[in-house]
Image 1 (cartoon, one colour):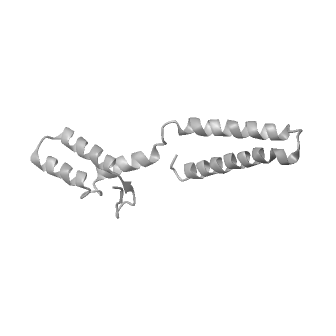
Image 2 (spheres, helix red, strand yellow):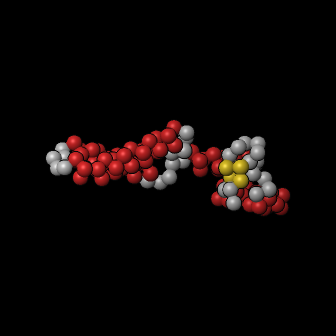
Image 3 (cartoon, one colour):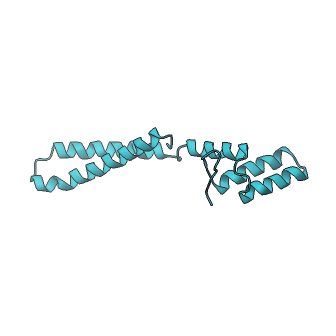
Length: 120
């Protein structure tokens, strides 16, 4: 279950906790460390700097392949636009092209805004 740590304001997921706990165990095989890693796994120590580091890394890393999808969407948008510009049929028949182009524009703007906030 995601948790927003009060001190850091970073969303912590169970994957962040597992990664930090596993790193602790890998670095040392003593009881204190194993107890600390159990606390981390339970979510009792989300402010631990390793948990915070894993969460910040996860949040700053774009989803795999998202850039490829955005590039494909931009190309599709351009193809729709060119088809609309070259349209020689009835104007009302071009409405689906306009709507599809608008949806592409909205999706690209949303991605751009997300990327500007450091999420992609």
